[in-house]
Image (cartoon, rainbow, N blue to C red; front, side, top):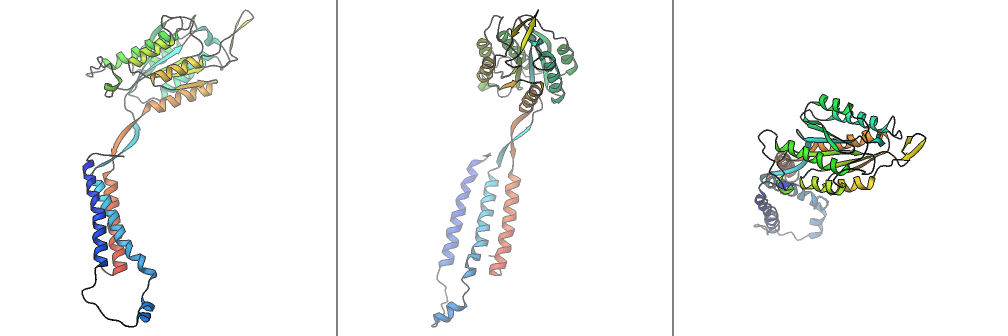
Length: 329
């Protein structure tokens, strides 16, 4: 919880001051003393069990005072709200290993199905682009709000030779960065520091791969460094199992995913890593990423809650005072 006017909290010093004043008034000797010689009889008629009830009204009043003082400081609570806009670039591996059938029906078909489900769950104002990569990385669909354009480009993917992970990470991050820099009147292309990029439209790369790097000019670490410099987090998904194989004329070639590299890319760029060994796990990974990207922290003022609490406590204090002292002090 934060406060817009924190100096107003200095008013909480009134609470102990009022308490001290109340104790002083209670302990002050009566102006008119009455002599009563038979103390045993006096003790028998005094109800000591009800002495604690005298504190109910003062305590409630002090709590009301504290709540009202906190309300003056205009408290804010951090909540999660639905993000209205964001730019997401999907990077999909279309190397030959995507023919493997350890993820049914094939790795590529499972990826296409999961991405289509993901697109259907995104808020309508989110912009999406698509980078396909094998031996090199190509923009298959520009950043757009036209979901059908992305779906059409996704349907054209077909396995090819090579896996250029580093080039694909850098290309996807650059596409996301350039799209935000050219969005409307934002003119944010010159933003080069993550510490000064807070006002930019949020961007992210969703990177799916099922193998090890075998091609490309940049290493995976170089690609991650490029994305980090552009302040674009990369969420990575390792698709497939260690038992995945490709059959070439009766010769079976193992095609396990490179989980270590993809995890390192996510950690370096501020994203998150997911392991998808089944089509269900893949769909769940995209759903989890969608939930992460669709929500953002926001400050919500809750002054009304403190004012309501102060009013209710004050009413309870008045009621307790009438019940205990037969008057409102």
